Image: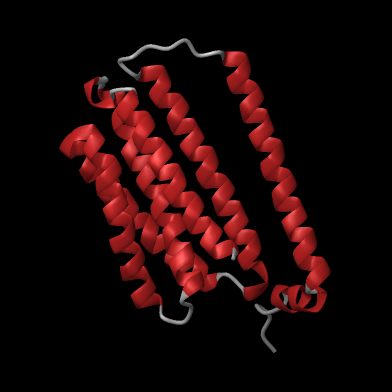
Length: 190
């Protein structure tokens, strides 16, 4: 269930980013906007690589290629708002992110899957939030940005992230105390 929610979060925030970028007319904005498709592509690719490998564990080659194909489609979807350079930036970053996400998922112990998914979801939402803020600051359609609200929002996200991560670790340890202890000692050789 958590794996499917992660996929849903990735797709939902992609649409939020896409329609916000369209509304803010980012294509007409200055060159600073070119970092948006790259940052989006890296985070989306990493999250999709994790989700694909957690859904179909055991075959890293297949899940890597599938996550690269899926994330490339979304990268083109978002990147086209930023012209050809945006598509190229998004594609390059998402391909690298998909490979890293798949490898990270393959190396994640079973006792830490929930923790890893929650952490990546929170990082993804935070990065998309920062990208939305960045686009709003540098868009052609100038809208006044209330810095007090931005600071408050960032603080709330930081507290929520820390609270969620700590509670996730504590829940994992409460549910699987022996498995966590064993996984901590797996690197020792006799």
